[in-house]
Length: 232
Length: 186
Image (cartoon, rainbow over all chains, first blue to last red):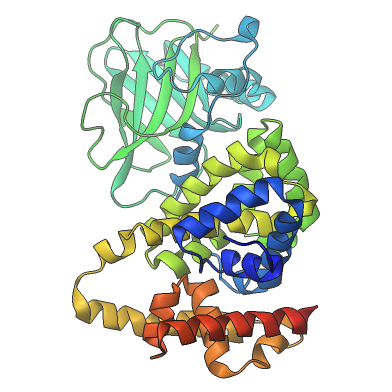
């Protein structure tokens, strides 16, 4: 390919009119030829107003979690690295949740206060936050096959998806489903018989196909996670 | 969606934060831009689910390539859109769109819709915009060919077919159309 008329080549590249071999040649040349790089930038900007006429469409709620699950982990300070998670592909989450912060602790206080006023106390309360550290839900585990999850944010669920609540009673048991959330703000779950929930036990909510995870283990993106606290 | 409110400077700042490994900056870009980016990809791949896949791949690419962006490469927005457009074009060229088309009747139907989509992108431009005026100044077939390529992701061969022109003629008309456009916009 001859790089004589850079502006013309840049236009055809930006319009997607080059065949795959030419396209690859342009990309390779642009990496070492700033003039071509700049010509491509100018061509992109010339046509940009056409893109801006595209009316934004609704973004599916699971698109960001799908992206996030594919992001390579950033550099981790080993000293700060938290213990392994039920889904150990999302280590970064733990750093987030550690800082997830003030809002979470305030909510925990409210959640605890609220739960203390009731006749039956949960054995543990877990505040679940998303990766941005925003509080999404509170799980109260009463043990004896009883737990309540309270959603604190609106979740726009596609018709074919459901939210599933999990806990990790022990590493050996692995994640166990506590039940599905039908989208209501507060849902009574009927978990299987499990060991008495302990302090710092993991709880999480994942997005799963309607009817729940087909494998019995979390398969979808994690929407929120948190550690249990014992009411004191 | 507050996409229109965010300036290209804010976008450029977020891209450089993403280059430093800042996921929140990537999320900000996603929140402000994803709706429009899906729409742009959908014009090319013509299916919402494929368009969403395009945007998913594109954001993973943005995460990995953010350090490559510099203002020499044009506006931050142009760079962002180019990643989405290139991914959409690659999916298209891989033939996924054809695989998913179900028979000639459907294709004809979608073809008519698609012509609408392509032409509406042009007529939706503000009348005072230079691109609009310069496209207007082009001979109609050339304008149509350029819009089919940029907005709808059509190849030279597809454009020649749709415009009933020999391939060589279509290529040279588009090339000359692009040259006139550059001159008009300079």
